[in-house]
Length: 262
Image (tube, rainbow, N blue to C red; front, side, top):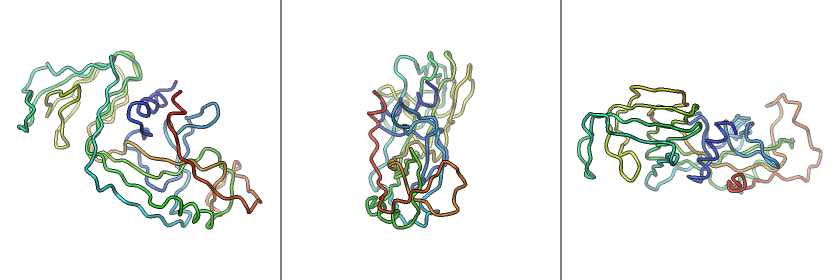
């Protein structure tokens, strides 16, 4: 299993989300994408890196996008038994549960298995498409029928106000972080979005999305069934075949991640 598919499957299993790979890659609500590395036995899963094909705007399809009004969620995940967090590296560490000034210290992340993950995304907000069923009808009215297997419509995008993601690409990897390091609470780092964190040392190899602002971490997608509509002149691709059956209607179907995790 490739590391990017392993990453996607782990996030799907542990958090129930379709992961953006690589975290922070530009992807927007209304994009139409494929996942060229997500090949399965019967279908291509929305796993691994994505390839943008087009978007609703390019099809002259109007869409209503809304932002969540609920409080922002945070997600923290560390691969069990293969990622250790050690804060006993000196410096001043805040060990209280109260809101006190940030500690100045260091911590070390030790990965003992290739593909193991440290995922930390704070204050995540979500933008979503409204009236997807009405959108289906509009797409049917605004394009030509073309064959395009395993293509997905991005119906929502989740962005973390602050995030850090690490996936080890070697069996033994160590990463030392310095800055506003606070205590570990219930196995999770006690960081907030104002924390200033930087990498001070690393040993081995890993994919690292450093502590960054506004990181796209998840998407919601719906699959286009077999065919979808497209306007003339947007593609030059021999794999697209015209369908003369004008009675065909585009359908979008929900994606059940569980079927890809069996």
